[in-house]
Length: 127
Ligand SMILES: CC(C)(COP(=O)(O)OP(=O)(O)OC[C@H]1O[C@@H](n2cnc3c(N)ncnc32)[C@H](O)[C@@H]1OP(=O)(O)O)[C@@H](O)C(=O)NCCC(=O)NCCS
Image 1 (cartoon, rainbow, N blue to C red):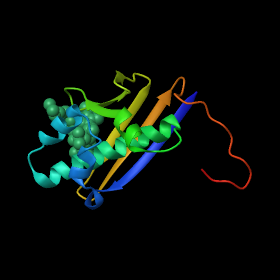
Image 2 (image 1 turned 60 degrees about the vertical axis):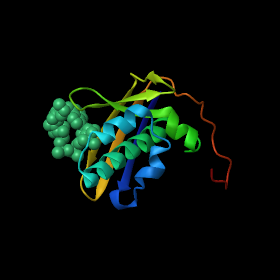
Image 3 (image 1 turned 180 degrees about the vertical axis):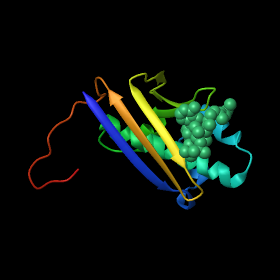
Image 4 (image 1 turned 180 degrees about the horizontal axis):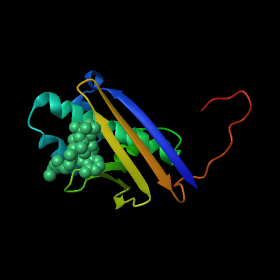
């Protein structure tokens, strides 16, 4: 199985305090290490875009608060992001994040079994 996900986020729409409620301690510590306030918002936007891109790559049904918590974006010492899913390193997911002062984008690839089996949508319906 193979999944791909992409997401783009407007940095100005980011509410840092609200998103911190679904960020893990590691995610918050990483953001807090960015000293400049504007830059902090950008980093939050990048992580949030990362979570949404992974959500799409995993082909999950709906992006609720629990899913946003289940998908954790962490970073190696060299700055490269990696993904933990439900507390475990997801070595089958690749993630890339980029951001400017205005927007953040992320692309994720998932190789291997998806966590939830997919069912086709009935005619004339939307999820
Ligand atoms: C990768 C790099 C070239 C991106 O620079 P950029 O074009 O200015 O920034 P972008 O917005 O496109 O990308 C930034 C994102 O790339 C990711 N990133 C950083 N280093 C990375 C790396 N080595 N490999 C892959 N992705 C990386 C991060 O998610 C980062 O977002 P963050 O700063 O919010 O954590 C730059 O961060 C770099 O040279 N990193 C090398 C290592 C480094 O300086 N580490 C600092 C800690 S020692």
